[in-house]
Image (tube, rainbow, N blue to C red):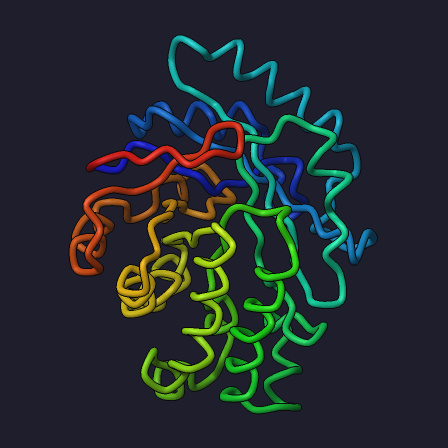
Length: 265
């Protein structure tokens, strides 16, 4: 049984808008023992919605809820930074606050968010996916400001032919490059269940990628729903143990004070 959700968003992420209390209460109802709130910060694009306008208030608010709910659920303080090869300048922010956990997510490939699909028209799906993994590898090697790579194959959600054009085997060289970069720098990856929420037949990343990560010696694997609403919390977590076993994991990872804590399920 998975008892922690290490990827969720609240009112501090403008693509959520849900009060922190609602997300905490929903997590308790779903019998989670630990949650980590990881609202969005994209320092490269401060005018966009993925930007915490007041990080001090963000951290202070979560600290207050952590104290209020300490007898009912453990709340950890996280953040999801938008990594890009052209911008990795988060060191000052990360070192200024007591974050337990930092997700580094590549939401833009070559400067464009696949959500808008323009990049697919310009480059084609195969090239987008290749660049996605190679840019992740570069970010992992250049930055120590994050702990795990978030939803590694995020772009696949928005590809028109992704189910035909995407597999581990097809992009194995690029995927292995990213996985090796993660392992060599002491980082991890996450199993993000939002792929199922978005209608894909797999989580993020593909189970075959998680399995390959384990084969290469990867050990750090967090579990997150990427929930933006109460009903998204712990989304399809009942499917996760089978995926973990298929991939060779007998445990998953939580973070506290930026340090991994391994937990058997």
